[in-house]
Image (tube, rainbow, N blue to C red; front, side, top):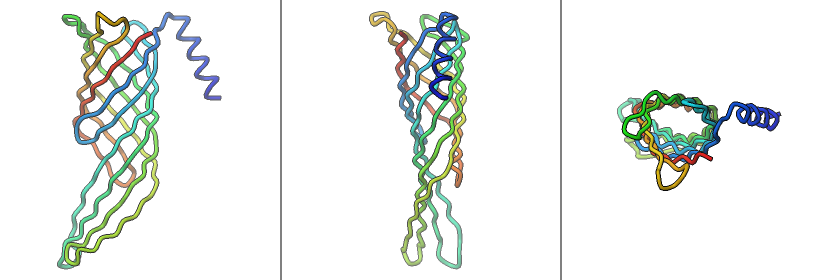
Length: 180
């Protein structure tokens, strides 16, 4: 079924003169999310489906009696993402665009609880579902010497729901794109 949908989308994009592309990007910031994706551009619009891996951390301290107990959740997540980009301006060879992305996936969460009074700690691992939302402003440039190869930078906000905790804030990404 998935292959049939992908095949139908490929033929539909080919009939409207869409250009296929592949992306690879690395994340910078508190939540480092790396993504590979492929999609099509039509005029100023781009739609891509991809795979993203991220990691997140959460620290919670609370008092339980006289010693402080610290709980730390660490998530390693994998997402299937859908991104839409719209290029709204061009300045001196640079394209300026807005990008919105959503993702669904799963995360492996490792919880470590440490008692500062006795210095004992316990660790547990569990699987959870996760979601991702992102909104970014981007700047891209195509290399003139290599046909179809370009680079881009994104700055914006990301929100990750790892089920046991949320992680959101400013983020940045650097990437390369090859258009066929």
